Amino acid sequence: DNDNDNDNDNDERTERTRNDDKKRSIAVDCDDNGSSRKRPKVKHGFLSADEVRDRITPYWRLSTAEQLDKKQKEMIRKCSMSIIKEIKTVFRTREKEMKRNKHVKAIPMYEWVGKRKAINVDKIISSPTQFEYRNKCELTFGYRYLQSQATVGGNPEPSVDAKIPAVGYMTSGWSGGVTKPHSCPNTPTEACGVADILDDFLSSSPIPPYDPKLHVGLWRCVTMRFSHRTNQCMIIVMHAPSKGGAGAKEDGSDDYSEYFESERKRLIKVLTEKPIPLPQRDYAGVDMTMIKGDNAEEDSAERKALLKVTSIFFQEYGGLSAPGPDHPVEHMYGNDYMEEVLGKCTFQISPGAFFQVNTRGAETLYNVVVKQIQQIAPSEPEKVLLLDVCCGTGTIGLTCIKEGVAGRLLGVDVSGPAIKDAKINALKNWPDSSCSAHFVASRAELVLSKEIRIAREKYNVTNIIAVVDPARDGLHPDVIKTLRATGMIQRLIYVSCNPTKSLVRDAAMLCAPPSKKYPGVPFYISSASPVDMFPMTLHCEMVMTFDRLNETSASEEKEKKQSASAKASEDHEIVMTIGDQRNETGAPEEKKKQSLILIAGGEDEVVDV
Image (cartoon, rainbow, N blue to C red; front, side, top):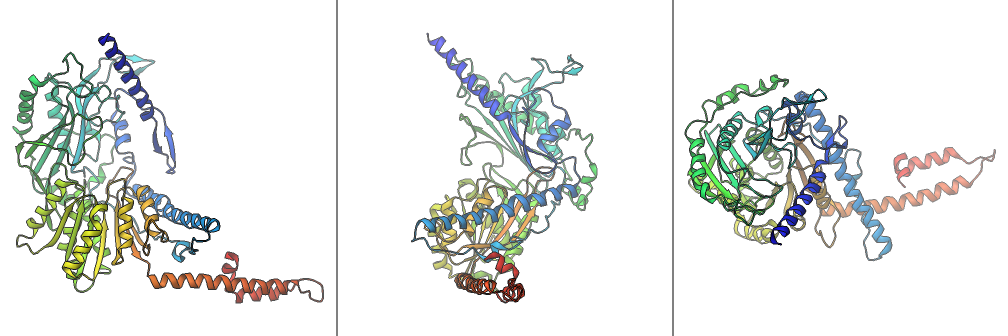
């Protein structure tokens, strides 16, 4: 009976995963015009190099200029225009509430929202490196389909057994196997070299890769970080518990504990005994002129030596999805961190810490942030407090301090390892402890109000400039509430990796009229600067600058609107009165009406009324 129950459970679990696969197979893609459409079910089995590139880097067929043009239009249409639409929706909703509830105050739509170009989107900034720019890669352990010689209808089809254990990108969904990264032009060659080492290791390992459908097996994924500026490489191998994952059978057939320790030692040995090999890449059909950019010589100078693996970590995880940033890791080899040089600073990076995946692109991105701070920074930077929300390892805040645009820094991040790195980075770049920086590991919405109050009292600052760099989900509503309520924040710089979704929502809340949930004088958007951090992909970063609406000017604008509305109504009555009068022919005196319309403030104003 127990065996039958287990079989039924497995059947139910398999059926659920089949249904999940059907849901996952429907993905959203973009056509040539940028409009979204559903694409058919993903192909399982062997994928050609072009098919892999189409999934990982869908813009690889376009020139750099064509990519930038598409992303520029995307930022205008789906970011800036969507933000204005959201803000106008808030005003319309409030107007409807005002009709139902007499206690709701009328607030006229802000003048800047109604302008033809309410948000001025700057020309998109290109990444200095277009090719193999990623410093971090995540590959999945699984099975790779081989190209079969069998043919069906004249086309090659993979047979059921034509697959081997391997690592790679999961380009065909959970059940479609993994593909080699060698054909992806944004992936560094060192990542391909590590993938080859792992493939060779798996071919003789008694421990199978993890199956995300049945939750059995052991090896799950590998994360690699590379730095050619410091000649370092960090590898993190995530695995299921050695006695079996969440779907382990009761008979113990999924228990790999007797092999695990010896296999782990063997894996460390094969990863560290030689420098990382540089395999031949599959770039057939790729425009290789992208490699020969303005910074080609600098790129070659950075890649002056073969990298070696300098640190290895193992991470056990028995969950069904993905671990959080604070999930523990086990240090097994080399240094317990790696370093990267970015701008004028050197940063320590722990296994779970966030760091921009395009180092030279990040330098370009941070230069935009520095310039936005410089525009309003006073002559005494020590009286400027830079509030760095979602600060990670402190890269943005410490870069701004090093550039001299702010004298005080308060950084907040939910990741404990990242904050630990941030504190070390402050000491690393200012050995004499001259950097006035304070970092807090917490959810920003829980500590922001308190930490701002303490910083104001301690440093006697006269100006607070906020920089937020949230994850793709955007800011917590309580963080937005605190930012709005802190009147000393006159400028907020939002660095978004999800500008067409979470930024649209957050910007509308920052700029909406005051309410019980979001009190305080709102912001307006003074600039928007897209930065192409991810060439050949659909993604783009946006640096959006919010300035505080002046409280007096906001009230004056309200009075001006009310006065204009009253005047327009009065003039409208005069026009109607004269319109009823008849001249000698009996026709309305259109010329007098025209002149009164001009006196009332122009044609546009009358149309608005």
